[in-house]
Image 1 (cartoon, rainbow, N blue to C red):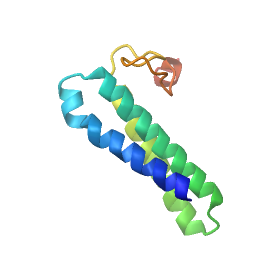
Image 2: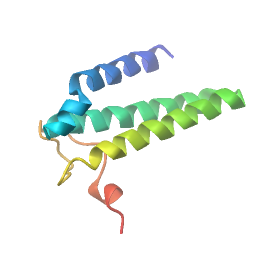
Image 3: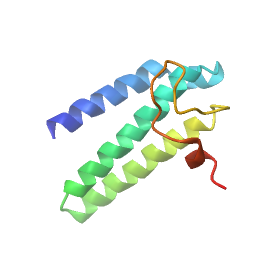
Amino acid sequence: MGKLSDAAAEFQKTLDTAKLSFSIEHVDIPSLYAAADAYAGMGEMATAEARKTKADSARAKLVQKAREDYESGMNIWKHIANPSRISGNGYAATIEAKELYPD
């Protein structure tokens, strides 16, 4: 559990650094990539925790949190006009364009 909480702190730090409303307003693409990936990571963490959780009510809350985090990430991707597998900072992105724009 310690590694998940460490990861959660790093993802939150990324979101704080990205300053999402500012990044959206100023079309700061590298920050938008970072924020979208941070939400994806938070969703993965919540999913991992849900798999380990035995209590139904706790698992349901974690699954809901994962869903919300994934949705938040997808909403950020909508602000990136031409998403690429490589971010503006040269890092690999976690999502493919086909996931954003299904047929």
